[in-house]
Length: 142
Image (tube, rainbow, N blue to C red; front, side):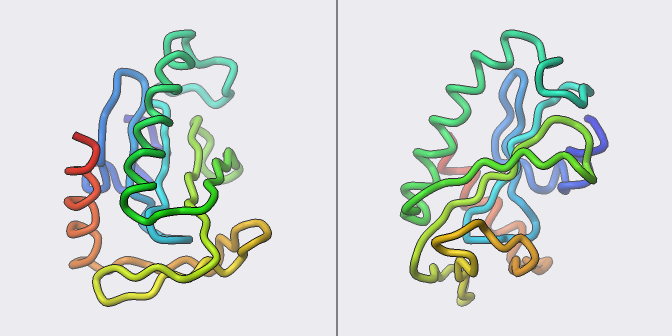
């Protein structure tokens, strides 16, 4: 796997693997259900992905939106392709909502609502919460 995928905790954060993409739980939860959609390729420019990756991306996004709609009842969803620190092709998937969500006894506010997400206010999951949330979300991707 490429260094970007490894930085986001693979394999411990893996929710679903596709032919060209991985869906990972984002360790820093900007909002509840924040994910990383990472290309398995080593490329560092979006246009360099193989053509089948673009076709498959439609199915991956449909799965993500189905799972997150059920899980956190988001009002909007943001796909951020930042690639400033982590160079391999990936998107931060941030479910957005006007009122905080709760999970595992924790509150997950959307500090930026209704504007851009505030990436610096993310909730860091601990060593117990991370595998629990991965397990819960991974089951929804089946």
